[in-house]
Image (cartoon, rainbow, N blue to C red; front, side):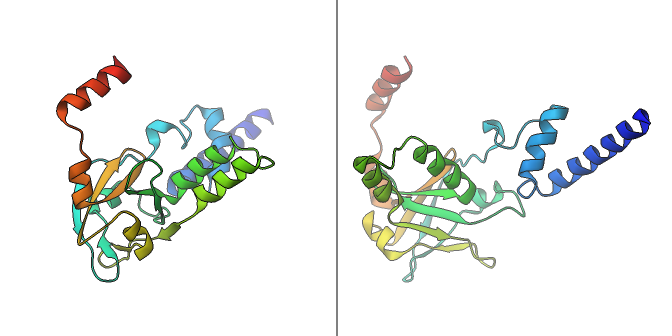
Length: 196
């Protein structure tokens, strides 16, 4: 009887494994339970997260639409949520673009550090959540429509630069991006200070 039960459990776990491989998002809870048992990596392992790399220029049309770089779209798994969250970057004059999943993870991390009975924390959270937009590349051309107010905040003219910044993408006004680059000597001094 025990052997029969064990084989049934193993067959069940194998079928869960196949379901998880096909659609990790829907089976996230199942994956966390069973993958722990059979020694697989969990999907929230940093090594398994999307990493955006590279720089791409794009023209902005009159409606604020721009072509989302295909190199960035290609690292997003087929069948996953393609929604993107766009907001003004906190410390730079650019827009930060997150996959919806990464935004949920990051905003929860920030939220977990706050006490909402503290007025300053509440004010910070309100500002942090202000001026966001959810966009999705259209099927035909891969364009995204960025709200005009967000493009105006960073002084976008006719061209932008998309830059991959590991777990997120940045959108810069082309002129700002070029003028914001550190000189080599400043970059080396900063690297030595932080990493040396």
